[in-house]
Every structure is written in C-alpha cells, then in structure tokens.
Length: 343
Image 1 (cartoon, rainbow, N blue to C red):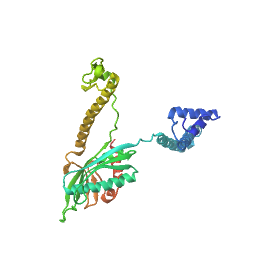
Image 2 (cartoon, rainbow, N blue to C red):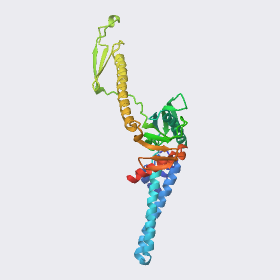
Image 3 (tube, one colour):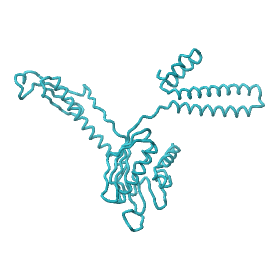
C-alpha cells in the first residue's frame, strides 16, 4: 500500500471502519490515490451515506404523516440529485491522469504564393502562444523560411504534454486566409491557404523476431581462415519467413557469434521495411487531412477585414484577433460542445 494514510485506515482498531475501507479498496481500487484525494473520497462517501439515510427516514415519515407528502417527495428528489452529483465527483477523483503524449504538427504552404508563407508565420505565433497557455512543451523540429518578408514554407513542431491530441485533432485540414496582402501595395483582398496536419509521434520500439519466424541453416565457412575453414559448420544463414529476408554471416569462427550478428542485421532490415511502410501510411493520412490545399477544401477561414474566424465544419464563428492571440481554447471548446450535442 503506497499511501501511509490508507495503510493506517486499513489497520484502524475500529472494525467497522476497517471493513468499510477494505470494501472501498476492493470496489473502487483506491490503493494508488494520494492522501489529499483519499480524504476527499472518504468525505464524499460519508456524504452519500448520510443522504441515503435521510432518504430512508423521509420515506418512513411519509407513511406515518401523509400531510407532508409533497414536501418530503421534493426533499427526496433533491437528495437523490445530490447523490448523483457526489458520484460524479467520485469518478473524477478516481479518474487516472492521462499520460504525457508526443504530437507532431506539420504546416505547409498551400495556394497563394508568398502570402501563404506569411500566413504560416502568423499561425506559428498563434499556436505557440496557445501551447504556452496550455503549459505544453514545444520544439521546432524543422522550419523552412522564405528569402523575403519573413515567411515560412514549411513548419514541423513537436509538442509534449497531456491531452494534446484530443484538443489539436480538429486543426488538421486546409486553413484559408482572406486579407490585404503585406506583399502588395494595392488594397485588394487576397485569398490564400496553408495545410495543417496533426498526428501522434510513432514510438521507436525494438523489433522482436519470434523463433518460429526464422529458418536457420548452417554451413561450412569459405575463404581465408587457416585450418578452421571448411571443417566446421560455423557459418549461419537466416531466413525470415514472413518477409523472405535472407541474411548470411561467416565472419566469426563461432557459430553462436555468427548467428547473433546475422540476427542483428536481420532486425535492421525488417525495421527499415516497416519504417517505409509506416511512412507510406503517414503520407496517405496527410493526403486525406490536407487534400490538395485548394481554397474550396478549407475547414476554416480567417477573415481579417471583418475580424471573424469561421469553422465551416461546425458552423462556428469567433473574433479573429482573440484567437490569433493564442486564445484558441475558446474555439476548441465550442467545437467540442457541438460534437457532444451530436452524440
């Protein structure tokens, strides 16, 4: 038992209290809760028990005195609602903290030339301010800048923190901007786009090759090596049955060492094949998220003249200057509310 408080409770001299704690441990699995959450948990449980007792007493009163029936029913309903709210609080206390995740955000130029590159720089500022407000760590992995006007052709950011993907997944798609270009003197509204893709960073797991997947053959070594050559089956040939990859090794005099070396080479070859496969799948996903980056494929429009940002998927509008200042949480909250209503 990690918590000293829980250990003390579980060994309390009061047998009724001790049994109650054991019941909670078994039913709610509270062993890993910290002491402050344990205190809240027990306080809520006491409150639930008291409200249940009150409901029972009110029901008994109704049977004896029918004159206060309506008043008692009202009180019973109130207490039932209160118990329901307390149980929601219990769920929140028992809810496990989400693990830190790593997310990649990729932004690329769409249509609109230099103005599209300038818009990526503006989005970069907006997203970085939002990440800072959310207390997420960020690292710019790659940034390709334009030669003029401080624009950006491509941007890749790694974000670390909790509950990132759940908030940023709605950013994937074509973002359209409508404004007077900084690159031109003529006062006309120009429309350009950029493409945003948000996806989870792949974990680099070491490839495990099962024995049943490998066919092992041994043969006599050939080449220089004195008397040992061609006398013992020290050379090894491994065949990976699912991929048909063949690796031979006769570098060492020992069969065991040759086998170990061949397995290492085989793992590298299989990892490379899987890497290419994953990259192809990732590129397909990006193609789905991005489309061709055309104006008609937009998910969101940033209209500077009217100071309005519109999300076309969910028919949501907000003040543009507020969102561009990193207060993206307001827009994401509205999107989530629309999605929850549809469920």
